[in-house]
Amino acid sequence: MSPTPILSFHSIGDDPLPFELRHLTAPPEMLEGILKWLTKHRFKTISLGDYFEHLESKKEIPKKSLVLAFDDGYLDNWCFVHPLLKKYGHCGFILVTPEFVQKGEICRPTMEDVDSGLLLRQELPSRGYCNWAELGAMQSAGTLEVYSHFQTHAWWPISNKLVDFHRPGHVDISGIWNANPSAKPNWLDPDAKDIGMALPWGTPIYESARSQSAPRITVDKNVAATLVEHVDQNGGAEFFTKPGWETELSAMAKSLTATAQIQRETQADFEKRLQFECQESRRQIEINIPGHKCRFLGWPGGEWNETAQRIALETYDATLTTHPHATRLGENPHLIHRFFFGQRSHELTGWVWPSVMKFSSRLGKIRGDFGWKIRDFIANRAIGFGSRFCRGNRGFR
Image (cartoon, rainbow, N blue to C red):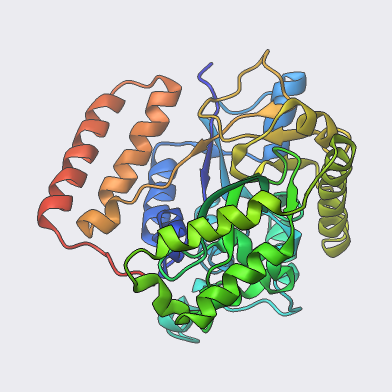
């Protein structure tokens, strides 16, 4: 039997995510093309629960099965993904981080409202994150089951090694999240264009890792305060346009850090924090979606280690990585792998079909199907041609 892959997406919408997250957005037309292709070729999307039971107890699943995943809980998943899955009779799951779920008890409009003539497509409020009402509605509809993506989805400093400074053009998103956790649900809002200013210019950026990966450190706040004050007194954002600013600020930071107090998280405290992240995320999801059992956890960034996995399995039936592999019968059913699909060819070519063909070739390669190499060749040539001669959609915030 051919392997059953999990193919993962993030944002599906008209408005690309900002900054370095841009590559995570794909157009709704691409997803619709993929769903049409899957339907035409008689593929069956199955639930993550059915896939887990297949791996754990050899439950029968259709021969041409796959699982669709959508990470992070973006609002455009409600606006575009949910209606498209319903339209074509497919399903998937969505991984959400409770700290990013937006407030609100009313479901916002979707493409179904656009198709009904109730509003224009450009009027859809698709930038941001889903609220609990929308997540619950997708769970009830069976289009997207809701599972955990950890409680915080954070990066934390793991050493006092300085790697950069928060500055215009190099916005430290994780630093903004850590300093303003209550603002997480709204940092993508259209009126949040100045999100970089939520963290003072000149704040030091240290070597970091995802919150589940390693014990974190805390550097004396006086280091950041002194650097920020220096930047502010020397022009603020304009300071970073002056020749030699990096040498000047780095020397200052090195001197301050050398004598600063550093608190290091103990292994016991690290494990306690992981336990909280796992348990609280599941608790929040199950409280806000009554009757739903949140059985699975998707590691942010796909990163995990043996300690994190051991702790997670105290709360969940299985965890999900982003290791590019289709988990098969006989392999560990409690550590399920998945592929990331984030094809940007539409940006390079202005066309959607190369992305759909790229998806079909990727799926064919995983399954060992005949003809995937030809489709991959055509898709790659179209993308290459488009990047040279077509304008595509290159605008971004």
